[in-house]
Image (cartoon, rainbow, N blue to C red; front, side):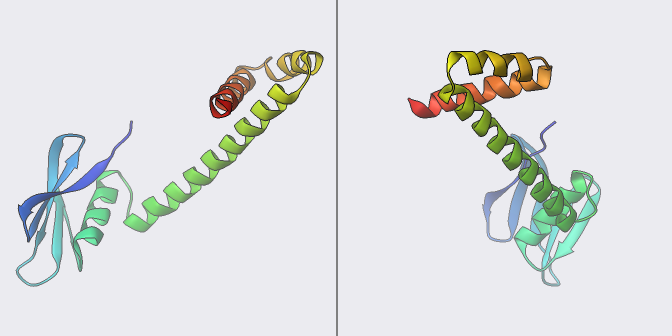
Amino acid sequence: MSQIYRLRDSGFDSYKIITKGRVRVGRVARHSEGGFVGVIGNDSVRSSSEVEAFEEISARAMGYGSAAALKNRNRAVRAVQRQRSQVIDAVGRAFLSADVKTQMNMIDKIGSTPDGASLLIAGVTRSLKRSV
């Protein structure tokens, strides 16, 4: 399930709203002693800026210990997605540039597994969309 938190302007200088989709789930407000406080549910975080408070409280709400832990996880996920995207592109280009006999061999080898079949379909579809 995707959890996208956004920091939205409420119209006041010292107060912003945290939303998840369209639902208001929290707030970031200027603290009277300086700094900012981010609140989602019963959890709160103090920080020196609005963005830092938002990042920390949203990371905690998603189940991470800190914003740095969430950023590290996102970095790793993006690397895996980038690598899979490169493989999909390579398979699609190889399939479309091959002759019919080689294409049939590729379908027999790669298409024999469900993951391989989806990889082949995604690669060919992406390559065809890019060539138009």
